[in-house]
Every structure is written in structure tokens, then in C-alpha cells.
Image (tube, rainbow, N blue to C red; front, top):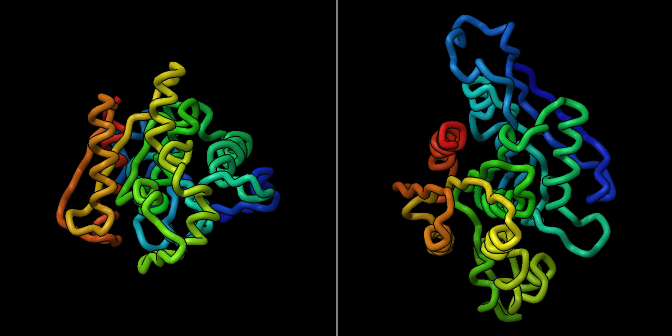
Length: 269
């Protein structure tokens, strides 16, 4: 297995984007402990993992066994930086983070590493802000991603309409941040910033939605919006599973549930 740090020119960001990548060992160089591993009877698949609010491309690298995900499941694990963008596109030049992930990064992986060339081999996941980003980006680019893993997703889009100019979110950010990120907060639920809108649009246009794995801790402060998304997917008869278990908003919950999510994505077709 090898690990690389990469910077490349992104049109969506109007500057360099950055990511770390774990590349799995090739099938003809398997160490003894990987002999007989069924995931090496196929070519490597690709999983893009998105970090949470205020994180960067090192979060999954240092806080989770991303290298083990790569080695155990024969996955190229791609970990980009997304700032505090919620992985959304804004009109201002250099602030199109959904396009950065779903178009520029994927195209670079295809051209440089020969990865993510087939939908059936390409997944996206994330935690917190990155869980929202995985849902949003995966549903924005359903022709690219076959599966989504969303852990403790920051689905704050459900609550934006209730924010006022004097609102101050003690966990994350102020009112001005949300307006800058999501635009008119009173219209956010009806915009394509809402994964529900994207899901229904894909159905209406005959585009196949990715299958979805969601997980959230039963003591997580984001549990309520995760229930709302779960109920929506159930109502839509989506190909999804939702897991809830004891836990809060931290790596003690995310690390083991990433294993569960990866195995679900790889083995439920």
C-alpha cells in the first residue's frame, strides 16, 4: 500500500485543490495476510471520504484507520480538503466545492490514477459536514457515484428557515455564515442544497439514485435531522439502510460505523 499527498489545479476552486490518497497493494503483490481476501479478486474500487466542519484532508488520515479500509477492502481511499464549505457550490468564483469533488477530483483520479472510471466502482462518504456533503454530492452526481456513506450527517438544512439575524449557533457558526453558505435561508429547503430535492429530481428525470448507508449515534446532537432524512428515504422507498447505536458525535462512533458502512456498500448491490 502507498500513501500520497496531491495538489492539482481545480477549475471549480480557481486554484489548487488538495487530497491524500491511500492506494491498496496490487493483487500480484499481496502479502501473506491478504492471501485469500475476496476483495482482491476484483480491481480496486474508489471511496472518497469527506471531513467534517473545520477539518481538512488529514482528518480521516490521522483519526481513523483509513489505511486499513484501503488494505482490507481493496479500496483507493481519497481524502480531499473542503474547508467549511458544506461542499456546496456558490456563485462566487473559486467557491464551487460540489463541482470540485464530483467533477474535478473524479476527473483527476481517472486521468492520473485510472480510478473512478466506472460508476459501480465509485463511492463517496463522510462524517458530520462531510456526511451532508456525501449525500449532497452523491445525489448531485448520481451518474458518478453508486453508493453513499453518511455518518452523523450535519443535515442542518432542515432548520435553516428558523434562523434569525440574531441567531448564534453555539456549536458551529453565526447567522452570516449560514447565509453566505446556503443563500436565502427561507428557501433552502426548496433549493438544490437540500438532498431531498436532488433525490426527487433524479427520480423525476429517470436518473438512478445511489444506494445510501446512514448511521448516527443515539446521543448525537444531530440525531433529529438524521431521523428526518431517514424517514424521507423510507417514504421514497430508497435503497438505503439506517443504523442507530449508542454514541455521540465523535470518532469512537465513526470509526467502527465506517467499517459497517463500507461493507454494506460493497456487499449490497
